[in-house]
Length: 287
Image (cartoon, rainbow, N blue to C red; front, side, top):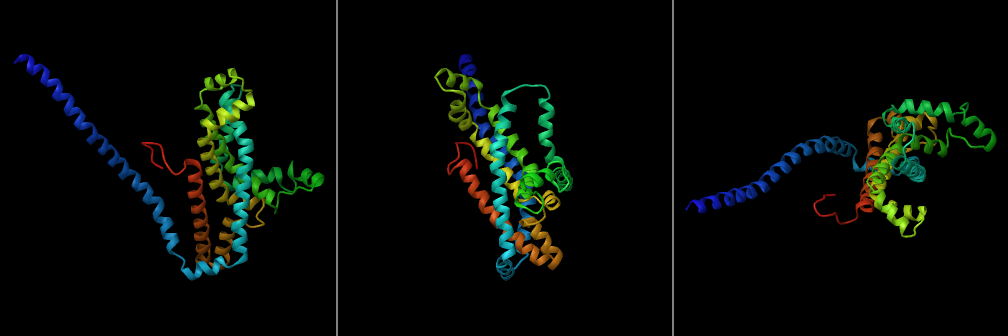
């Protein structure tokens, strides 16, 4: 009998532990769900309140204005150009930061993150000192090449790139750091050169992080106001047009255009998430 008791007790303990594990996991998920729902509600309620402000007639009236459509189209175009430059320049810089060690690397990384903390008007003033009519680059660029940053699409893209590119660099750097360098070495031993190794091994493995950074860059660029207003202002992007409508006509028309911009951005972000994550999520991961 003593042997039976000794054998039975561990078996029952193990069984009871297995029974408790799913319950504890459910409690953990429930607590996190409730706490996360509070943040989701904090974000969603103001957006729903904004969406409820304008009437359908106001939305149609504002959407029919050519200047509104031009402002939204300009924001989309400038944001896409910003993402293109961020992908071309930021991904290369992120790879260097992920793979090389050199003096001042920490300072450079902190400097690249600084635009995320700089207030928007300060960013605009900094850009104006460099790319303005009397700026150290703006004046010679206008004199030698006719390239102007004030009142042009070029200036809008420059302002957007300054404040949004750090998202691409940070996300891509994390993606490259998560790629095991031994995989690159194996590819080299199999006959691939450094460029083919990067395109066929490193880049695909870091693709999701890079795409996430580009989506964040686009989101930051299309919403930029302060830096664009100080450096370029004209032609008006969508955020500046919303501000102009608020000053000229009040809250109703400004809210109507803001809702139109939110609808466009929401549709784009849903599309971007499909491109990044696809239709199906990996097992155990929610999208």
